[in-house]
Image (cartoon, rainbow, N blue to C red; front, side, top):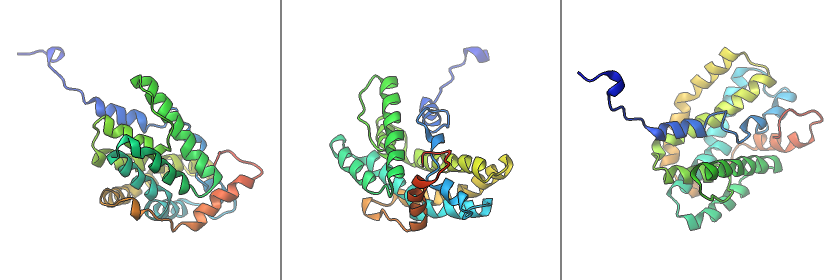
Length: 222
C-alpha cells in the first residue's frame, strides 16, 4: 500500500495562478477604486444593498463590466500585433478621466508584476486586455477564467461599498452570492459576442465617475 506522503499528487498550478491574479491581495491597487460608486453613495443614490445590487447588475449587463468581458475575450483570441488596437478601444470606452486611469494603472501594475514573475516583458495595457492575453499564454480556459474576472471586478466594488454605505460583512457577501447567477449568464453571453457587441447604456454611472473628480472629500481614486 502506498503511503499518502508518497502518492503522486497532481497540482493544477493554473488554478493557483488565477486565484493569485484575481485575489484582492494581488498588488494592482484595485482596492483604491470605486468606479464612481463613492459619488453615488455620497449623494444618496445608493444607500442600501438593494440599490447596489441593481447598480452592479446594470454595469455588468449593459456597461463597463460587459465591455471589459468583451475586451477580455478579444484579447484572449488576439495575436500580439493586434493588442495595441484593442488597448485603444479599451481607452476609448473609458467614460471619464478616472475610469481611464483606473484601467490603465491596474493594467500597468498587472503587466509589471507578471513580467517580473515570468521574466518576460509585457507592455502596459488596460487591465482586461493584459489579463486576457496572459491567460491565453498560460493556456487557462477562457470559459473558466472569464466569470471569475467578472466576479473579482464586482467583489472589489462591493468591498468598497461595504466601507462607504456602510454594509455589514454578511450583507455584502449575500449580495455577492445573489449576483452569481447573473455573473455566469453574462459571461456566457460575452463568450459568444465580439467587439461589435460592446455597448454603454449606463449613462448615470458614467456621469457619477465624472462627478467623482470634484468631490471635496474622497477615499477612492475613482
